[in-house]
Image 1 (spheres, helix red, strand yellow):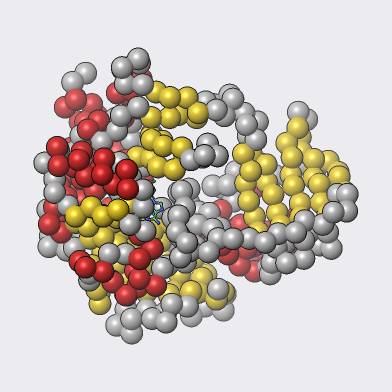
Image 2 (tube, helix red, strand yellow):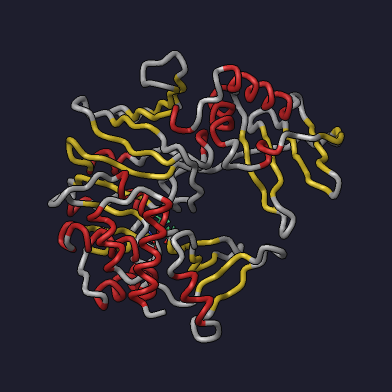
Length: 377
Ligand SMILES: C[S@@+](CC[C@H](N)C(=O)[O-])C[C@H]1O[C@@H](n2cnc3c(N)ncnc32)[C@H](O)[C@@H]1O
């Protein structure tokens, strides 16, 4: 199939999976993703190891994935073998771009240029002069800029830490981040125009992994917005300005071990994201994590960063082993919060929202900003 055919098919599938307005449909149809990626990594389903997909060696696989709406193409790995950059799934980029509510003439700051594919979509829709994109890795920024120029786009691409925004071109009507932050960096609040809008995945810190939020600025300078109904998993914004450090001293006492059969949905981060968010907010000193076991799925880990309690839910051939130690039985504490959340009618992620005050205080709420369920952090 020629590139036109592949593009057409991807856009058709995109529209089936995600609401896509005509201007964005046009932009997706015009930007060729194959111009923004070279060889990329795929995670092997069985071993969990990264496998390189080479354009020259397996062209059919390469082209098929590049034009799949739900394929994330990991383009670089860090020293620990974790993804350091990728071309996000077009499906997710479409979601982010629709949430951005752009109209002709708005200026956009993008954080996390990566391959430049999403930058190209923004340029196609709004014109290159309206787009500024910041990438922390200078090599990636240079490569993306070259690819953008070759594809006919000339946005301002800056190699810098996106936590600081990019003051020379501020204010921005829209800010879109393709890496997750635990709180909104101060610079983004300062560089957003009075009626501006920020779309960003949240991740790390108190909030955990999952929420994608679109925040609109109000007349008092605060930002308010609701979470999207589906959780997303994004690589984190790497910045010394963003503190994700956790000091966790696990108790040295041997853990208590027993066999448990947790319900299936508590073993799938997407299905339990809304319950987990409630538990994180409602229970003091509770950290929830998912630890990948190479080729053997995921292990749930729970920790009290202050009191050293911890729990692990380890899958084995016949079910799960629960290991717990420390002053609190964290799995039971967590299940108590999940029960509480169930009693509230199992509110989904889109029942929650976030307010960020002009002074930068963050508050997650349930149902509406003034609700009785509010958590400041
Ligand atoms: C998911 S990838 C980008 C996806 C991109 N939108 C695309 O389609 O190619 C996230 C990017 O954020 C970058 N990044 C991480 N921390 C950053 C920071 N502090 N400032 C700017 N970019 C950052 C990473 O290097 C990575 O390239």
